[in-house]
Amino acid sequence: MSFKLGRGLFSKPPLFTYTRSNITRSRCLFTRTTQSSSSHTARNILSGTLLVAGTTLFLVYYFDSRSAVHRYVFMPILRNVLDAEVSHKAALKVLRSGWGPKDTRVDDESLATELWGRQLSNPIGLAAGFDKDGEAIDGLYDLGFGWVEVGSVTPKPQPGNPLPRVFRLPSDSAIINRYGFPSQGHTFLVSRLLSRDRANTDAAQQLLSVNLGKNKSSPQDSVADFLTGIRTFAPLAPVLVINVSSPNTPGLRALQGRGMLQELLTSATKERDAVAESTGKKARLVLKIAPDLDEDAVRDLAQVVRETGVDGVIVSNTTISRPDTLLSPEKSEAGGLSGPPLKSLSLRTLSLLRSQLPASIPIIGCGGISNGKDALDYAKAGATAVQLYTAFGYDGVGVVRRIKDEVVEELEKIGSGVTWGSVEREARERLAWKPEVPTAPPGEVVKEDNVDSLIREAEELKKMLDEVAVKFVNGDTQQKSSGAGVGGGGSEEDLREAVVAIPPVM
Image (tube, rainbow, N blue to C red; front, side, top):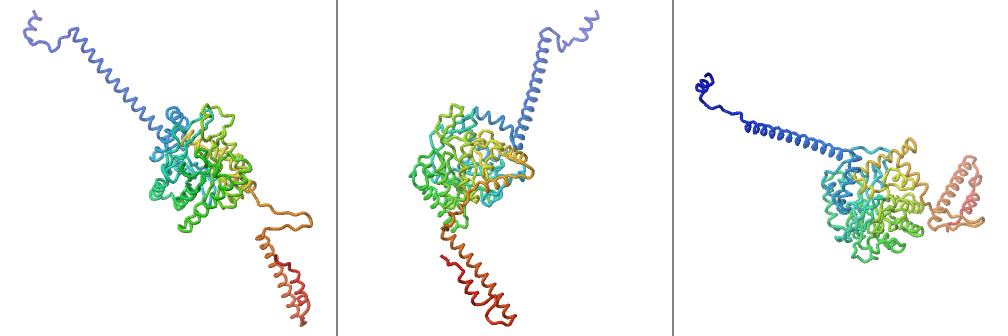
């Protein structure tokens, strides 16, 4: 009764009937909502984690001067994903953009050195070949290089040799390249340098060198391309490098022969001096040579350098030899080999050249430098500074800071207060070429060079005249004090004897 009455009193149908199907649908709806919420939360957590990790990785990459993450993460990935030349171009673009890493630390005082009258905070330079057209100069200085060399640049644009032309030898940490001077030409690089000078107030204080090359279409025995390069870049760069040692331009290495080199360097110094007279800017001229020269060729080359007044020599370019120790199958590729297998050959050539050049002519060591000990080995052989290339390509942007730190550690092992400058100066003075002092058998007189002979005899004549004057004056003083006539220690007879004793000047 009461149930029916209730139904009569409450005649409206219930708002929701708990049937089995309704319960099932509500459970599904609740489940979907819960799953969607959980999935969204998971995605947020994952995105946040990736963002934090990515930001952290970027900050480490950007501010870690030694860039270990670049050496052990990015570079191995790039080597396995990208072709060597594509990887090279990508690195240039990053450095040009200004988003490359920066060496934020101040160089240790023990690394300081002087090169061509300029004080450098460290002796580690970048060799030519990486930034051929001056695209990323400031980005390279940001990495901590003490000085940078761009090029090789040719007068007219040229594409270089056909692709592929760069090959990694990973088992040897080496590279073989046959680029063949790909260049956008003088005009392009001039515009780069001028725009950089306007935008960068530090440009004038930085030591920048331009590596000059020859067009492949130019006559092999012609030096005109180098003279054009000197006229073009001497007002813009403090150092110009004459590259006669690339193995990838036909006939170029023939210019290292004594006769042709004499003609080239004589013409080059005259052209440089003419530019200096008209502009007031005198660039340093530096010769870059191959490591494959024999001893006689190195001695001939050194004599030409001494006679023509060249300001320095870079030892060395890549080698066409293939050491038996190479393991990588790419070792059979044509081109110039660089990296650790080159070090012993470059050091041999540098040591020989150091013994043939005076200490006043600096030598730059280049070839197989991948750590601080390698760099210091060159200093101990008499190199004023060094350059990197292949290690930079393998280890990436942090290699400069790492090698600088390792050099400091090596110097500390030698002793307290030892610096790069003290090591290289001692080696340079000890190992450098010194002119021979002529000697003669007993009883014979050595025939001297006319100029040296005249200088020596003039000095002897002056000394004797001074002695005569002193003796005569002393004698005259004695005569006056004693009231005597012409006589005593300063007599006319004594004067005649002293003058007769003066040897004739020949």
